Image (cartoon, rainbow, N blue to C red; front, side, top):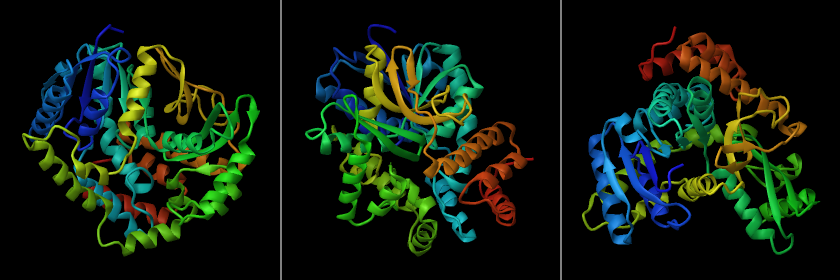
Length: 425
């Protein structure tokens, strides 16, 4: 890897770009010597706004970082060291369809799982494979760091169908690991926190203090803390005790599905409609010639820890640190009962050669079946997108724990294919 670094952001018109820019400018140049930030997006107007903001922010910070932008993909990727992908095909209009149509069939509409997550993947995988092939051609040594949702499914598609190196990222589990370390490090020194599962279906199931296994103690303490707070995202102390693990909040869509659907039906707006309004505020603030810091409206967007995780991975690669970080990567035998080339979310050792999954062993029986069913759905979704196969899409939803009913799948799939103007045979 070169002594000074070039970073390309694909989907730079995203409202998340100001957080990336802020995170980059906070890095120690001795540890992460980025000298060039390349921005590309198919939306010229949004690209211009974010390029202008990035230039002003870099100048204000006094950092020697050149900002360049271009709507063309290949020139921005060529020779880059890292390619950050955060594309959203169809924008919030498409996300609104993903969230609103399934609810009519009594199924949660969500952008990373269920029918909504599948359709986001079906739209996102083809351009991500194009990006992967471009990286392999013009920047073969680069790492793709992907935040485009559903992150694990996208990483599996690119890793299977291109020669590019990709690492899927999500700040959810890393944020939970940080919380555990912050809460319990004084009681348990040298804490290491491990997870097993898939993106947005992860469970922290092992905690070590040095060489001592303190999982049972920490899980009990976490359950007691959850008892004191209003339940959020379907997770409370009773669920933590039941699973003997601390799951990410997204499990509420699975473990309390009736409540999730009723909540969605009662909402006056989908999350997409809420975010669309927030994004307009972010873009308007970023476009102002006096804006040199991350727009305040971005705090309401969600996705906290986005840039911090991104640059932790970059630093670990650049400095060959061997740091333990949770990533989405091919299993390679890490989790028993999952195909080697299927992408999982586990703690990895990150060094100059990328992210290497640490051995986990069997998935705890308490949630093994759900993880394996979801993994079958994810892998079938990848192949449905690549082959544009309606049969594989039906099989994907048939395996999904939230769907699994042909009488629902067939009309739901037809309606969503038509709504998104996708032709599958």
